[in-house]
Amino acid sequence: MSGREPTLQEFHPDIRDIPLNMIDLSDSPVRDEADYHKVSKAEMVAGFAKLTQVRRWISQGATDQWLYDAAQEAREGGTTEAQSHYNIYRVFYGDNAIVLERVGDRYRVLNGYHRLAVAQELGWTTIPAKVINS
Image 1 (cartoon, rainbow, N blue to C red):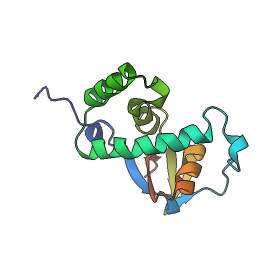
Image 2 (tube, rainbow, N blue to C red; image 1 turned 120 degrees about the horizontal axis):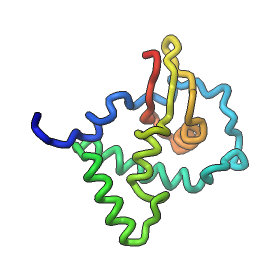
Image 3 (tube, rainbow, N blue to C red; image 1 turned 180 degrees about the vertical axis):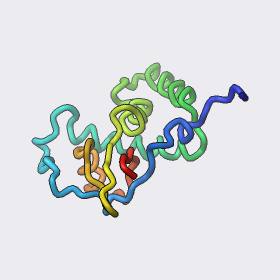
Image 4 (tube, rainbow, N blue to C red; image 1 turned 90 degrees about the vertical axis):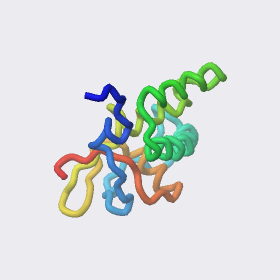
């Protein structure tokens, strides 16, 4: 064993980029801004800007510790935990990731309608998600 910390890609092999046009959003409860309760739509939009950077870091081989250290530096600079790149990483790659179920050649949403609605509105073509029954 090398003692090397796994990269985030290695750490989360169950999370992969899924094309948004393959996800069935027909039963989404998200219709307008009033449907955003835990996190405002504006905060979600800001989070997607951070997700772009997080995805770049992941593709470059970032580790969990590296991302945590970067978040610590941001907190020392005045960024709150909820606004940090590390929090965005946890929201999209951690225990509260978007969860989809593979049904034929499409995906059914089990968790993440609000994030999917924002991604669609922002014109994203893929989204990181955990897929079951794949």
